[in-house]
Length: 249
Image 1 (tube, rainbow, N blue to C red):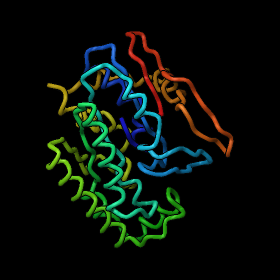
Image 2: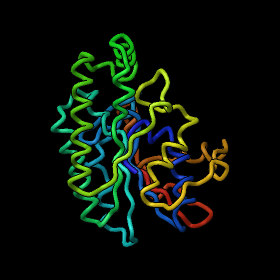
Image 3: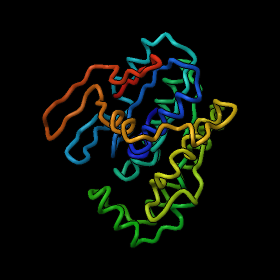
Image 4: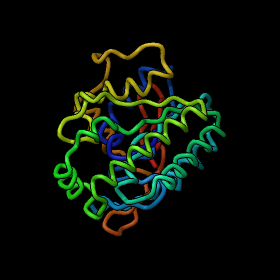
């Protein structure tokens, strides 16, 4: 599972659904983090972390003998807020797809919520930008144009590579146009898992307890920096009762 803030927020739900969807024990590899970029180092709330395609998850996966592999690429539009051109963002995503397909992985891309973004006003955008990406100076018409271009490119990539692409429902979003409401995390990840499973997991079977969420959110990635202090954590960070393991990068 690759992504940024949406994956970080829905992490416990995504893991719970994966455990229900696949016969265990399974190994879950994640590269996530608020503000995470696919291709360059990013800083969010004093936490510095590498780009997804440069992190240690790729070396770890190359040493993993278990098959098959299912992979999800989410939060792909994040890099637009770092003013990266569409061509570069697509290049980073394609690099990840290349590496995963070399490993024989089945892949799902998460598309940008374009219909949600089209309903955003310039004032609302400026406010969201000042809170989430204060260094971004792109005007709303340019940002929306880049988002539409990236979405088109992702759909073309999915078609040419014969991989699945998923778009969330417009009703899942509120005032925030890039983060679905928490009550729709199950809907979001059920949809992302759908290409690999025959039926969706009932919401009643999804572990959403405070203990579960606290445990998972307490896991740490292999390498990061907090206020310029380097940090490391051994992997796997999570070991579950059924023998499943969780690796964070």
